[in-house]
Image 1 (cartoon, protein in one colour):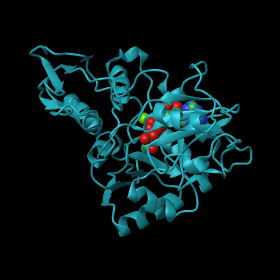
Image 2 (cartoon, rainbow, N blue to C red):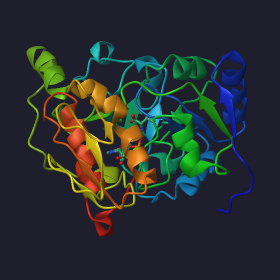
Image 3 (spheres, protein in one colour):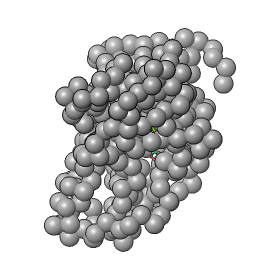
Image 4 (tube, rainbow, N blue to C red):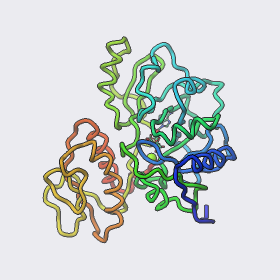
Length: 324
Ligand code: TXA
Ligand code: MG
């Protein structure tokens, strides 16, 4: 798609949200804030609107989209819950996506599920998204609002850096909080479940909660990962070295805790703070004049697992790259 216009950005106040709702109703594309990253939203029941998401992102068509809903009640229009998942007790709204068998009669554009028998559902907690979803009577398909393969956006500026001219509107609510994409949990028909993507929600803790209430033990991963997770992405466009405590002079350094950097994920060494700063640091590293990037070690605890997962993908060679 050629760039035809400059995308308009509006503040996410009542007027801005109403405007976004109108554009979405008419089949347009709006970049919306969530508590994790900005999403590139279109109505999930409209084939032409969903096709525009794939076109704007340059996203491969085999990679399905998350369907954003108000709550578990709306989600039930699209999913076969089975007897196992007591959705009322899932931490929704929040940064948790669940992949479940799709209801055959669900009214969704086929491209949303990319032909899979399952659907990914999430009720986001961001107050702006919640207001928006309460003003429309359809769910929103929304991947992260970046060109496929690039760094995810945690601010309106990040969205414009890669999608200016490709979306109808950006709803600006300032920087996002959680900073990394939602945890993805697949619940299989037999009730077993597995983590498809690490994120802000500690799925092991969630599992312990469910295990007590009878949900079968998590199985070793034997099925396909989320299609968008198959290869690396989050690319800053230059080589990335991880676990660095002694950066070279030509490296832009992303610090953590005691390892100082040109920027830091968290001076006090807190993984939550690091998650919320991760993509802004990578965006800055991408923009810098330095030809290479070094990143300090980040502990593999809590949301640190999600941070390290994204960093490994950012550091993977570009021939393995296929993003979302
Ligand atoms: O925090 C988030 O999850 C953000 C915000 C905008 O909600 N969204 C997001 O979307 O990260 P995206 O498209 O960048 O990542 C969604 C992931 C992809 O890896 C995709 O392959 C996977 O979810 N996915 C979607 N539907 C699936 C399905 N039915 N089965 C397995 N994986 C699925
Ligand atoms: Mg993405």
